Each structure stands twice: as C-alpha cells, then as structure tokens.
Image (cartoon, rainbow, N blue to C red):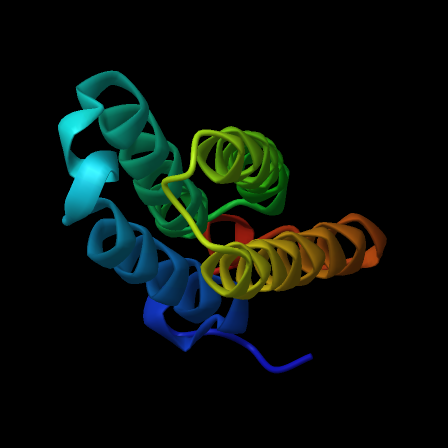
Length: 131
C-alpha cells in the first residue's frame, strides 16, 4: 500500500466523499427532504464517515488512525440501516436504494481493508518518525 501524503489520497476517503455527496443529493428532494430527523441523521452519518477518515489520518499515528477508521466504519453501518428505513418509508426507490447500499458497502470494505493493513503494519505513523 502506498504512503499517503494527505487524506484526499486515501481511496476510502474518496469513496466516503462520494457517498456523502450522494446522500445530500438524494435527501434534498421530495418526501425525504421533509423528514427532517431522518434526513439530517443520514447526512450527519455520511459526513461522519469521511470526516473520521480525515481526522484519523491527520492525527499522525496508526493507533489513532485505526480508532477513527473504526468510528467511520460504524457510521457507514449507520448509513446502511437508515437507507433501509428510507426505502421502507418510500423515500428511495429500489434503484436508488441499491446504488446507495452498494456505495456504502464499498466504503465500509475499503475502510475495513485499511484498518487491517494498519493493524499489520510495522510503521507507527508519521508522528512517530525520527526527525
């Protein structure tokens, strides 16, 4: 795995960013836009995924990065659960639901893969490098 120079280089962050944009798009119209509680919660969870990847990276240590990635992965699970409810309530058709569920699952898998990589890496992170 390549060394990242910024969180924007991380494929998991890129996918999470795509997910957050998609969630804002789908919750901005129709009945979904009027269900303020679910709309705001799914948006917050989507933003949490990308934000925690970024924050963990910026901490500079692999232990902290793994911690924040775990939070991001949990938020991706929260998004999946909320997507199911949104479909059940008729806010998403099957095509929208399937696309968003797939995007959310891909994001979670990328985050999980990064967690596994970092846990097995002998590099402790940029804040632990000798200067």
